[in-house]
Every structure is written in structure tokens, then in C-alpha cells.
Image 1: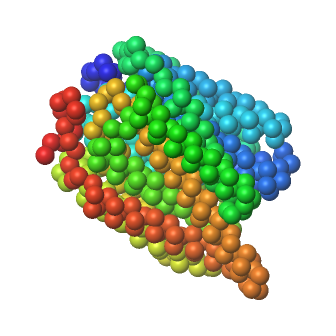
Image 2: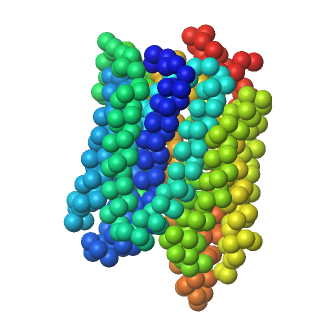
Image 3: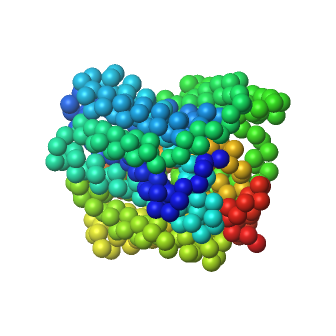
Length: 482
């Protein structure tokens, strides 16, 4: 277990860890704004350009669970710093890329480093903060980084691409990565590398689950191009399913499993991961589909799109700075989660109007405010529910599981929503509708489905989640008691 730090040093360590995670989260959206510039500079086609995003998602989603378990076995601090070095070096390669192949390959390495950093950071935070109120506050700050990072990335991407060039959406990671490495190297206790000493990695489980996740992500992100009923898509999904079944069989028999199936006997962990899949699908509808709507339908510039997300960011910041922790302490986990998800669903429903000549104050701002409020309320209790019932020895595993749930839900949700929007747009154009109106129709359908994802997540969380956090298996005061 991570040795406890005293006073302000523990909070400085938290801020360093969150800065490292923010760098990773930013990269999921900061690149989106710069894609047109990359296309023009490196000669990408429409088909090949998507791999600038897909290569990152493929390796990130595939290695999250493995990265979390490696941290449990070989040391959280050591793995976090190693992942940070890998991500930062890959960012330099992306920024210096002069060809399509170099950029896509470097993005894949970025995803691997990002998976390790993200999976291990949450377990480090959980082990640093064991007292109920402080843990809730720390998780509120972490939740803000996860929730707001995507929209902050859109703003930063617009600023860097407009003011400098697309290369800087990657090069900006260099000073951040170096700063976080030095800070975490000094602040994090070396005892964080004692976790899992003497244990062995379940290589058979690692190979099957990583292969399953990577094939599933590959099938999903390529589904629009290849066709959802094509032999390629169905074969890849079938092989991914078979590998996942093999993984479950291996985990039920091996002495030291990569993912103990008993983990999901904890009701809150199981429920939180299901909710995470649905909620991340809805969040991707917010980040990506709303950004496309603002750019393609309302003709916003890259910087204007980023600024449109600022109100939501400010609300989530307010929750992260203590408000969310106080709400969880007073009301437990269940109520803030389902109320937050419901508010987010209403925000997405407002976007589902998607008028052709929408005005910011009437047609954009209300939805942004409700989505920011909903994310601020829901993220902290969701993360606590997914992490609080496990012992420190499985913290990295639980972190990897919930982050994998978020990533897979987002990848699958985005692919499905983009496919629905594209199909609706094509059908409208075929029917003689003008292109702008057809695009708006496609976005409306995507927002309707995103609303459905958020409503289903709110229903599952509200009905099945235990209202308060349980004591840890070791009897430590790691959460709110009944």
C-alpha cells in the first residue's frame, strides 16, 4: 500500500497526478480540432485521416486493464513514471512527424503510455487518501479532470491550431510531461513500488483480454467504413468475443488471475462499470457530436467551439473544489449520481433540437450548463463506487477496469452515434434535403440516442447502486459507513 504522506505534500502529489491525467485526457479531444490542418499538411485522405484518432483509441483501450494490473504487481509509482515517459516521448514524435505513417505510429505509442498513466494514477490517489471526507474531495478533483478535460482540450486545440500550428497540440505535452515527472518523482513515496511483490503476471489472461479489447475497438472504429454487417466487422467482433470467453475461462482457473472475477461480486463495482459504459457513450455525444454541430451547422471557428464549452468547465471546476465532496458526504453515492445523469440527459435532449440557425444563449448555453452540472454531480460518486470496495492490492486493477469501461463505452458509443448520424444525413441528402439541413438531422438523431444512453445510466444507477460507500475489506476507514 502507498505510504501515507502528511499535510500539504499529499495534496501536491494529488495535483501532480491529476496534471498528468489531464495531459492524457486532453489528447482525446485536442487533436480533433487540428485534424483539418493535419489533413492539408500531410496529405491524408478522408479514410486515412480517422486513424490519427483511431490509432490512439485502439492502443489506449486495449492496454488499460493490463496497465492497471502491471501497476499492482510491479509498483504504481514505477509504472506511472514509465508511462509518463513513454507518452511524452511519443508526443514529441507526433509533433515532429513529417509523414502519415510516423504520425499514426506515434499516436499508437501515445495510447499505450496514456493507458498506463491513466490506469495507475487513480489507484495512487485512492491509496494516498484513505479518510472518507478527504478521499471524496480528492476524487472530486480527479473527476473534474476526467469530465472537463475533453472540453478543455477542444478550447486548447483551437488556440494552438489557430495561433501556431497543429504540431503544437502534441508539443505542448513536453513541458507538462517533464514537470509532472519531476514533481511525482519527488512527491510520491517509494513504498508505492512495494505493491504486489512476489506475485506473477497472468500472461495468458493478459494476452486474451488485450487482444479482445483491441480487436473490439478496431471493429468499432472501422465499422462505418467497412459496414456494420460486413464480413470484416462481424469476424473481428466474433473473434473478440471468443477471446473474451477464453479470458473468463482462464481467470476462473488460474491461481493469480489478471482480473479476479470475484471483484464483480461487489454490487457497486459491477453497477458502476455498467453505468460508466453508458455514461461515456453519452459524454462522447456531448464532446464530439456537439463540436461537429457547432462547426458544420452553426459555422463556429475552432476557437469558438472551445469557448462554447467554458461554462460547463466552470461548473465542473466548482464541484471539483469541494462541492462534490460535501454532497457525497451528505447524500451518499446513489442520489448525486442518478440526479447528475438525469440532468445530463436533459442537456443532451436540448441539443437534440439542433436548429439550423441556433443562437448561443438560447440553443447552446442551456444544454452546456446542464451537462456541466450533471457531470459535476455524477463523476465523483461514480468513481468512488467503482473503486471504494477493493483492497489496496487490487486498486490498480479496479482503476483499469473502470477506465476500460469508460474508454470502451466511449469508443462504441461514438462509433454507433457517428454511424447513425451519417446514415441519417445520407438519407436526407438522397431525399433532396440541403447539406446543412441534412447534417443537422443527423446530429439530432445522434443526440436523441445520447440522451437515451444517459437516461438508461441514470435508471441503472438509481435503482441498483448502494446509496453509501462501504468500509474497505481491510476494515480501514476508506469510505462513508452506513
